[in-house]
Length: 299
Ligand SMILES: [Zn+2]
Image (cartoon, rainbow, N blue to C red; front, side, top):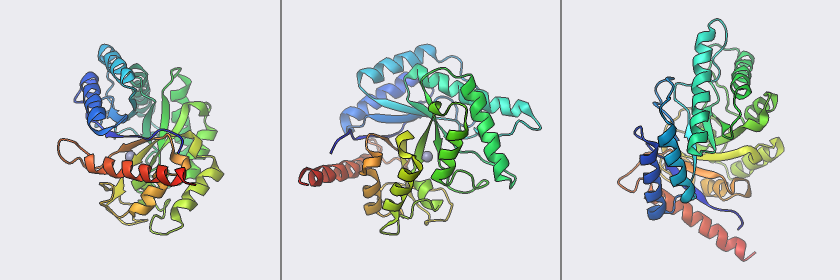
């Protein structure tokens, strides 16, 4: 099998990127992890973080030395479907928060910033898409760094936007600077939204094929590897540990070891258990890859 298996999890930074970097290195040594996700700032607020430089640069050199890749998750309260009308102040606050995350991502050496597709409180989906494109254009027009905006598919509530690969691909194409936009696939959201029928034997190959037809996979930088506590199509977003939820382990294995997902950063956002965080789940992922390696070796 070609490509590198990279797995890890969301790490809490507790306000210090350097501390987070040291924790990442320890998990790399203990568990073989080589990618992580973290928050650039308080996830419950749009408030900007301005005093990051020295801490971020220290973190960057630690992670580069250890060949660890990272992504940043934007604030939970960030909504890229926030409209400019009637109040552009609110729109600006969201745009500035995302821009701040991108600047910090570059300072920390992170690949990109994950943003949820966007929430609408009205029923006009087209207007929602227009607002998202406006937001992404405003942000990327003033962004000249390397970090990408990584659009994440959603579970299906809050207006029902961003539940298909088609929406992600189309929004990216319609933006001024598509090269600054990539994707993050969340497996729990894909399952509960009805995008990925992991209950059906053909479901995974159908998702992979649809993504190939849409030209989605080449732009995926990261995968949020989450099992689901709720049923297929339920639209209810409750993550479970890998192999402990409703998603069949066979389907998860098929998806994660597919050629399409090779080299993507596999990041767990599942409940932590104990000191070693996700030890058992990582063991499972390693075993799936080893098995795949073994079988492809003998083909
Ligand atoms: Zn996610």
